[in-house]
Image 1 (tube, protein in one colour):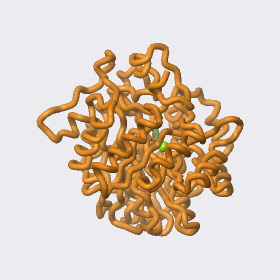
Image 2 (tube, protein in one colour):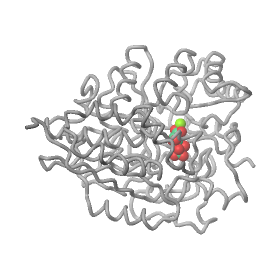
Image 3 (cartoon, rainbow, N blue to C red):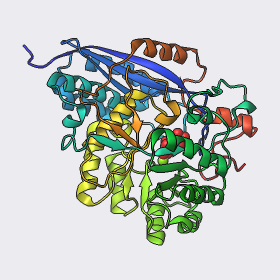
Image 4 (tube, rainbow, N blue to C red):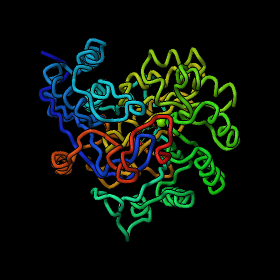
Length: 447
Ligand SMILES: O=C([O-])[C@@H](O)[C@@H](O)[C@H](O)[C@@H](O)C(=O)[O-]
Ligand SMILES: [Mg+2]
């Protein structure tokens, strides 16, 4: 008789939520974003949940993985994740039809799906052991709260489209209205930051670049730094600046930024790791990335070439256990741990909070989150909150969340209704610029 629970059911639930017309190198965010929930039930009647990016590729993989998961003993968590994470599975996964998304920015791999299964199993194991997931990761829980940054975007004018972008609500906090309005210039981005800081207490900001000319984005960074002299401000053009341009722009703000994220990338036959290494040597500006170090093989090359200081180890890319191993490596090797994000719901918010709580050492930079753009669209009964720029870990076992199945069902119905199940930021962009096409080396508005 097993002394630990057995997984009796695995449900895979695609869900959708509303998003603003956020601009990035891949174009303009669609009015909807999609995610997938993995909901596990065990023989004790507990429910565990995980969340992953919502492409049909990930959905197909998860649905195909159900027979490998149901019937597994919870104590086999590590060997099951290893079995799901192997290259063989990766190959099998790669046969699944690809999706329309921005591979250059969001390198989608099958472990996006594995991470959702792993998180749901960790949620169950934590409930069985009466421990928070952070205690089950790496060195165990290191802190009770995790700093997060205010993730700022230029926002396009949604009224130039016939897409279902929400209009924003008046009456509540300014942020809930401003996040749906056009914000294409420096003053409006500063205004966004003021509202976000007032509501969430952010002490750090990140500007999503790759949209305007690099010079203009640097001026935006300078304006943010002037308005918030105590804040740490960074910018992420998703490698669309040339090395030469990145060095010139970086040198203008090196006294203002703690690091720059993916300032440059592959060009003229040189890899992104090579150009980032050259950027670091030329400017002495620390470099963060979520584009060229998203698995152990990539990270090894990046570190051997001294290309980065801050791997943004997103658990949805790495799995929770591998992401916390990256954090341990960072702590031992004098690097800084960070975490990348895409649009997400409150299940992923809990996942990254437990990761941040388990990351050892003091060199943990505030994590990315898109939650400020989706706050209010909950799938759990009591979403974690961003207060004074931090997310506090609840004193509860597992992930510390409980799905609100009524909300999950509403988001699932929305998923069923929307035309584009996969991320494709060109759809909105082509309302703004006719026949717009993705070009990883040209800011989105420059065509
Ligand atoms: O949400 C966005 O548009 C971001 O650009 C996202 O897609 C990136 O993957 C990520 O946030 C990043 O830091 O590059
Ligand atoms: Mg990035």
